[in-house]
Image 1: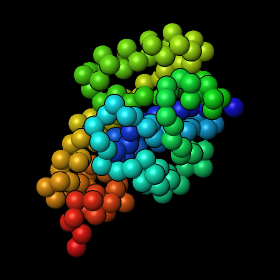
Image 2: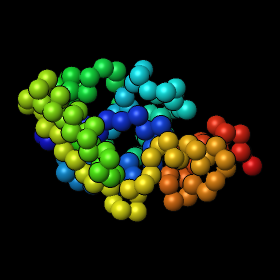
Image 3: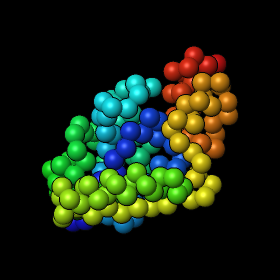
Image 4: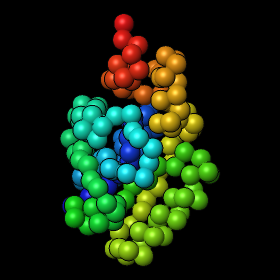
Length: 162
């Protein structure tokens, strides 16, 4: 069975993330979309549990996609899950440098794990979770950036519930 891991903070999930997930799901028998508990990042807007719950609801239409969370090194998590591939999304050339370093480090730590990059479609290449949160904080239009469920959750978090 071909198992892929798509790790990320997903704070929140964006249409760019969904684009990568949809395409990665067609490449693997099982794709594990996993929320990384990253203590080095700025305080997240959503808890890990909230992000997992949103992902489960949004991704329920993909029978070979499961949602999980993990703490620690991605390669160790991938090995534990029996995965041989880590999927990463690239938006622009600016993502490449840090992703390249991660891929080389992961390869050194676990040579049996491959990293595969999927470019987001051009219409999603500018979207980041940080941009989404900024737009949401000013009650801006999010319909082209995130799924409807995320819009509702963001409006709730920022107090813009109508």
